[in-house]
Amino acid sequence: MLRVSKYAILFMSWTITFYNQQIKQNLLKWPRGLQAKLTRILELIKEYGGDLGMPLTRAMGDGLFEIRVKAKEGIGRVFFAYICQQEIIILHSFIKKTQETPKKEQEIAKQRLKEVRSYE
Image (cartoon, rainbow, N blue to C red):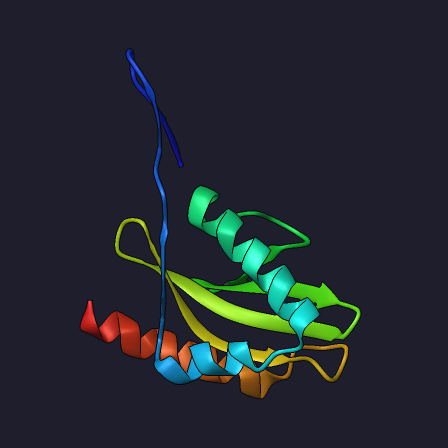
């Protein structure tokens, strides 16, 4: 987010957290090409927030968003949500094996989002 004042332009950075350590570990097991693309997208999110638009991010409804990662090794998806003022939480990730995003994967992310919101 960009804030402009009379005297300066301030860039507001975003914080990215993980729902649990297992999600972070699973992402480290992704193929290198997917990891590299995801790292670049996460850097953009830290600088500009999660609303990067297609083809990088997309709203899934009910406060759930997805990061869309594509490389020669395959296609990955990372579900996230906004919490607090400048914080994004990574809820779930997986490597796609079919054209459509499986409902099971979306349900995992939705359940985790529900849990996170219950603690706010």
